[in-house]
Image 1 (tube, rainbow, N blue to C red):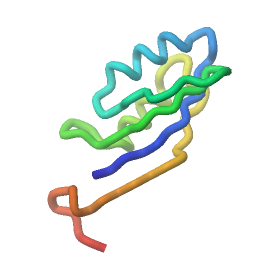
Image 2 (image 1 turned 180 degrees about the vertical axis):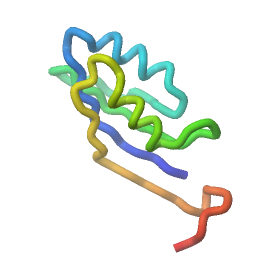
Image 3 (image 1 turned 60 degrees about the vertical axis):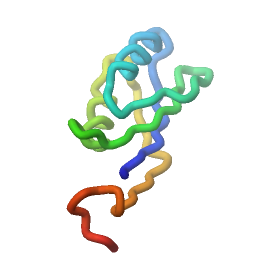
Image 4 (image 1 turned 60 degrees about the horizontal axis):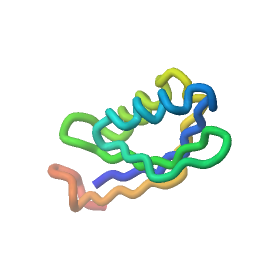
Length: 85
């Protein structure tokens, strides 16, 4: 299991387009909106993509000013083939 908490800053004029793009991404959930175009999302590994790849995609969404990792949890027991620490 790999979960990342991410603070996404979007340009206020493009906020709805950013929210729409995030809603179509597997493993990405929008939890809260804040003033100034800030979005609180979680990103998880899926069978198709890693959280790292999803975060890279978030950075490339038109209207995203920044995406900052603010929390990370990795549980090797939930990942097939992972070596325990």
